Length: 259
Image 1 (cartoon, helix red, strand yellow):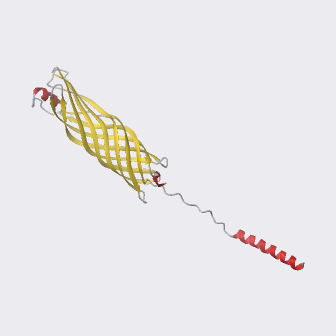
Image 2 (cartoon, rainbow, N blue to C red):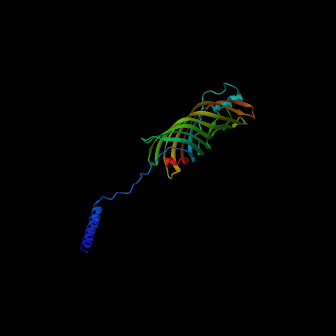
Image 3 (tube, one colour):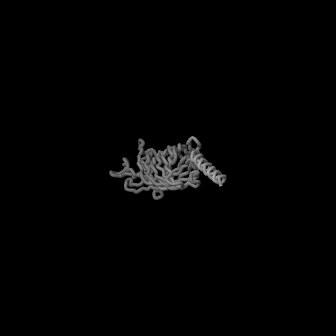
């Protein structure tokens, strides 16, 4: 009996000491896997809407009309008319971006915008009857671009600049009355230029982002043939054009930014 009692007491003491020793051991923290860093690497497509204003100078609509009716050389001097078009744009954009470890983002983007950026200015015709004038109108129906996009990604924010080639589709008209005869010169033009812009983009959800962007387009000088089919008259005018736009856009990202 005494041997059994001693053995039981010894076992109890060892068990208590083991529990005390185990309590002194450090408790391991659960393994936490860090979330992957947000990345702007993706391909995307989306839409945008905004407004635009242009600086469109037409030279020389007065000579076109007066020399058309009276003969070449009738008009002395040069007249340049600024139509100051303004209006809206609605369109879409698509492209791909790649973000490097340092936060730099490089991408390619194409964009197409349709809309109605137009303006009209009336100019007098000195060789006509009193009150004779010509209404000079310019209208941009669409603007498209193919650009390189360079930016810096700060978590879900992206600040970027873009630049590249641009195209614009324009319509022009010169309408009025000269010495009792009505006229209507019309002309169309598709011209190539360049564009630069900048913007900020925010990844609102894993697959969606919103952006605010400003763009400047320059299309330089170009000769446009104007024709009046009623009076069977035609002739060129020189048009210099630049456009500025502000657009708010929404894009869907195919790769969900790598998240």
